[in-house]
Image 1 (cartoon, rainbow, N blue to C red):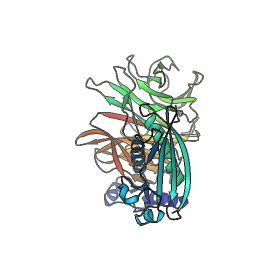
Image 2 (tube, helix red, strand yellow; image 1 turned 135 degrees about the vertical axis):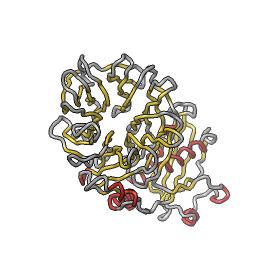
Image 3 (tube, one colour; image 1 turned 90 degrees about the vertical axis):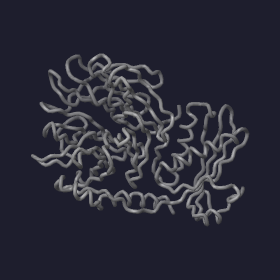
Image 4 (cartoon, rainbow, N blue to C red; image 1 turned 45 degrees about the vertical axis):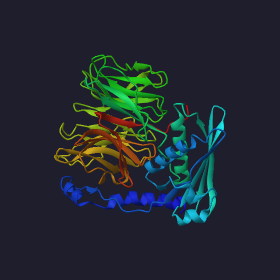
Length: 453
């Protein structure tokens, strides 16, 4: 199966969501006039990708199984393959027999060797096209020693390269997710976790409320709103030094909330609510620490801005149609006329909030009230102006979606009978996995792909 065919199949599954509606979706459609609500995912071909047990030399023998396990988990989380690993050595032997792998059903085969090199290792990977019996891609990846904090992330980067080799699209394994956790004293702080649910880390200790962490495009900083001075203000956390600084674009009344970086990282957009002057969305030049600019607002509240990948447009929430019916709107990134993306009709209902613009540029995710008292994760395609929504969840309450750097997965907060958790859903297949459970989590934001330290 060629990479272009795999990509066509993946997009075929995605586009099928726009055309199909579940019976439950039909009931919801009555509540959203003029909008089709898709919930059924079509069956699509998923190629089998096999991992031959990784080998090692010059000290890499003991670590090779750990590397293989991380790669196998990453490729499963990519939701693009039927992963075949942990196969008995007696079944596959020491050599490379394409006919055997073909009989086992593999389309792709990954072989790996970990060699000791200096104070770390060199990981040698090869992607084999089993059908054609040939090496399709190969690469060498520097991996630090096992005790190094960057060990797992270095392996994740290799996994992402396998995804790119096979599909032509980016992976998302080499990334982290920022989110809030509420402690027993009802304080909230920022925590980070790897895309596979490992390496949970607390990075703030404000002793107060904290909301809306957001990654800078180079992943060196996180901005958020904190109440630690008694008033909600915007802070930047340098992840290398752990130094926090409060941004002071204006001195005056108002709550400063929901920050979001522009794609170049030079500008921070945020909302000021309840100001004595103007409420609405503002931008601030964080690179030069100056130049506050007003974009939109009025007697209503505009908040939760999110930039398009090219930096030309902005999606945001508004209450201009009424406090009980927040909607998602689009406008030029430097302000101007706005149009509604969420399915609002004048005088009607509807509750849609927390937009996040996909890194592929063609989709915006948000959550909305589809059933009474229940919120679900929805995706709107910009090409059809939001007339077709994809409903990605069907159980419990689900809020605050954020896109992975592959533009295919979303992380969100889910509330189930057992409590709160972070979940990841594959937009193309609907495959769902739990990332964090048993904690009072909130407002996740998925990082861009992380470069080596």
